[in-house]
Image (cartoon, rainbow, N blue to C red; front, side):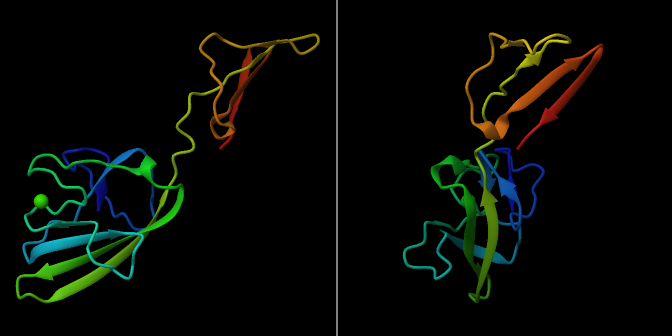
Length: 154
Ligand SMILES: [Ca+2]
């Protein structure tokens, strides 16, 4: 599971989703679990695990009962990643689970704006707040008469 809040609110399945920035990664609360080990991008579970947690709630990076320590996804490359967990149940049996997810921190830049004049040769103005950013966040706005047409490219 993951959440974008330190209080782990609004948890969602990490499998198949795209995450960015800081996220809390943790195990779905289950009273049958006594310990959890985590491996990022290591489905073979080479010892030692990246992190282990033997107290509920079971967090990837750690934390307290009320607040998870966030994992900064900008520390890894954009693209596909795996999180493999080894769960130890109360009867000491072990269970391995791997989920695949995507990290994408490319579109977090400040939008870049141009405003096109209504008539005559194209006249371009850049508002003072415009900053150079990655083209992934390019925001194009054109005025035509009283109508504003905008397009967003990703
Ligand atoms: Ca814990």
